Length: 619
Image 1 (cartoon, rainbow, N blue to C red):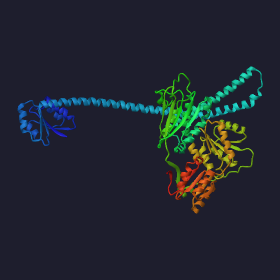
Image 2: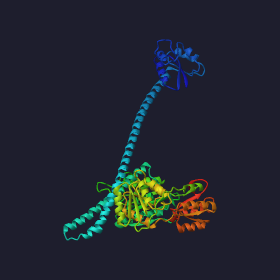
Image 3: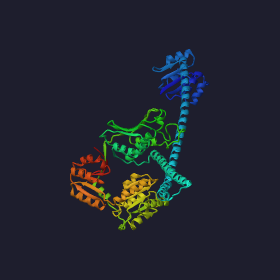
Image 4: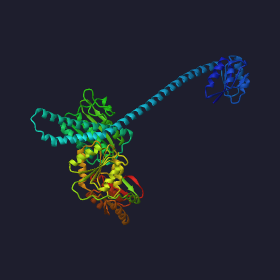
């Protein structure tokens, strides 16, 4: 900070004092004038600046560095220059005026800038407040859509289910008995067929729309439970093209696969990536009237580039980015009824982004489209390492006494749901194909029913009073007497990961296609209570004995092998549910590398017995 003195307290000195008082870089240590009534002296007293009547008193102030001499007297100016201490600069009136003009101009500019900054801050604050309100509105909208969609699922299950059931009864039982030459009867029969097909078709379309709304709501809220695992992109494409094969048949479009052999694995959520490809392929077919749709994969070493290429109508430049926004669709929606929510590609972008990739479109009107997404190559193997004592502890069980299932003809299905309409629908569907059905309205009733007579399969809702379906499944899975009963979850709650961690066998969300449900139930019931298989690779007899005892008590079939070749051979033959390997053995990581990427063993859970717990092993 520079220390300044002012000689002359008239108009010029007053102006200088005013300016310098606003500057943090300067300190006025005194002002002098022979006129005690000078305006500058009055201002100085208000500012607590020292006042002097003779300039020499000011020149003797310690630390003085700069003097403004603005008396207008040449005699005073000469005297000041003669008496001024060495190292103190003197600025005369003319230079001081120029400086003050500049100072005032700078102050005015600074004032304007400060006003602009203040205005900008107000605008920014208003924008931030507006942005927060928009976020809140968007969240309320998303929550509302999610809640409404969830609430629609249960009644929609009943509507679609009973409509399908009614259609089947009409076609199998009633229509064949209606034999009439009356044109009115024939017309009525045709109308009934058409109407009920419309009910089923529109119900299914509404289900798809609801699923899209729920998907985007969960993705944006970060509430999706991702089931990440090593995957083959070729298999993902095979599954997606199999699911969309009927679309190609309907339109007579050719499907081309351009997929190199020996592609590296990726790490991802199988169902979500299949969802992305089904969406891209379905869109490609929808907008292609003739030609082909190609699924192409290219490996860059770091990422896989997956493209869906069509020879369809193409997309305009302005629409190429818009199609990835929520509720936006390409083309003119005024010229035709939109076929969906406009959420499909927005969902795809969210899924791809979570996997560390990106998605984009390349297209020209009339020239077809190329939709490409990237996904990183997986360099890791998803294997769990666990301490032996911890593993044994996890196999300790609770026991619930259960009456054994008597010898009988019909298979018993226990339906557990607090919605009486859902129970009635499932009863009709199951009894129609020969099952004996028992019902429970909540989780506690379900456990009581199981104690009375063990069913061959249990269908569980999740959201029920007193005890959730997940809790019921956990109790049954932790009891050796009930752990092998097949359990199917049927619920509006989408939490497959939690269900499969508990040990359920199938997970369906409402509304469900009853044909798919019955097919899954049939497979589980015909399989029966097959014991789950475990292969143990360990040469330590004590460890093997302890593990075998704990696993067999839990209902597993245990096979012990001693070497790499034996483990690989038996794993390929038996396809076990679990493989437990001693992490200290030389063959450990060879076994892991060999088995982890075998397609038929992708669902076998690998456990390494080590000294510390670890979820991902780098190989």
